[in-house]
Image (cartoon, rainbow, N blue to C red; front, side, top):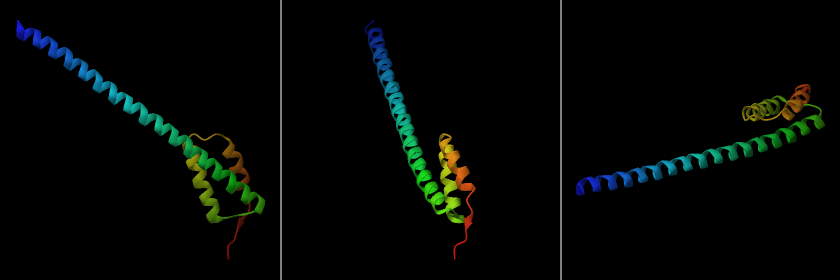
Length: 104
C-alpha cells in the first residue's frame, strides 16, 4: 500500500515537473518569436529610411550610378522580403526612371 501511495505521489510530482518544463519551453519560444518580430520591424524601418534617403539623393541629383542603383535595389528587395509596404514601390519607380550616371 505504501508503494502505491509513493507511486501516486511521485507520478503527480513528475507530472507537475513536466508541465513546468513544457510551460518554460513554450514561454522561451514566445519570447524568441517576439524578439524576432521586433528585429524584423527594426530592420524594415532602417531599410525604409535608407531607401528614402538614397532615393531622395538620387532624385535631387537627377541621376544614379550603376553601383548605387544596384545597392538601392538590394535594399528594396530586402525591404519587400520583410513585407515592406508600397511606399518603397513609388520611390523605386522614380529612381528607376533616372538616367544612369557614368563614373569616370
